[in-house]
Length: 111
Image (cartoon, rainbow, N blue to C red; front, side, top):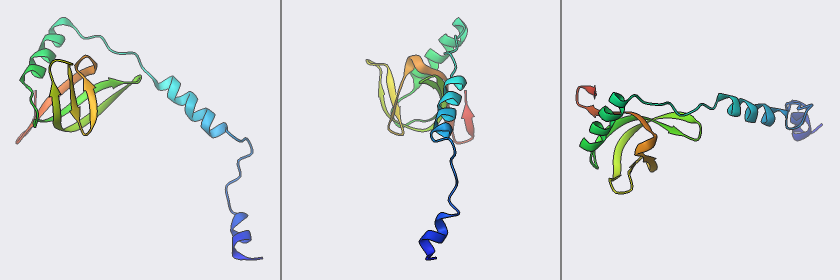
């Protein structure tokens, strides 16, 4: 038996084709969450924090995207007040989707 044929016998066996993908898809659907509501005070505090940001600031943010909350850290590459979004690491994050944001300073995260 040559090496290739011998190696084939050790390949994983998938008795139910597509089961793994279907389970992963179902798990993704079940783990999605609804967008959290903010209190009026939290919304005002977030608005104040966003108004102080500018291009070049290092930030840590938690934002809603596609049914999930995603954490992202990085430098603000673009900050557009008119269209209400910022770009961090090439990803466009709209202000309405931001749940928390913190400016990373020399002594850690400041809120």
